[in-house]
Image 1: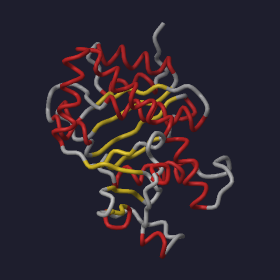
Image 2 (image 1 turned 45 degrees about the vertical axis):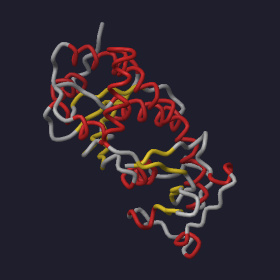
Image 3 (image 1 turned 180 degrees about the vertical axis):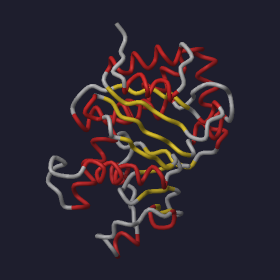
Length: 240
């Protein structure tokens, strides 16, 4: 899997390192470049890995994820999930800016406003698939009601930790909250209501306004399943 830092050390030219993505130089307008050999450029002379969008990547093992989460739990206990969420949220906010810059440049658009939202979102997530974060599915049927669902298949975090009986993908939840908040310029939150690490076949996230997220969090803590939460939201139930 790969981790990219879109702001601090993302641009290789800021490190005075030359990047030569041969395929991109040869086919600068190529858009279907998300296979491993096409998306990444492994530069053995500098020991760096860049991707099609000039973001620097690092390869990590599952032991890195286990060590990161175990270390946080040892340091802050039950607050480790909040820390991971906040890390993901900041990452999402910064990645929204990074995505905007390369997306508009690569495809020649001036803004997002006239584009189909699903087209924009699929283009944003494609690099994450290449980097090992898993496939996704977005359900925007309830967007007009102030919430939407995101399914993640093969979550890097949940797959690594295995069946531990609780949601573990706080980093993803923060990432979605940060990215979508920056994208639509409205404050949104996100909560994982179903997780592979709970014995489910995939992870499910609820993204929405604060009152929706607060209600879902309360119901989830009371033992409600993802289907229960969906039903309550569809019926217009909220906390009073």
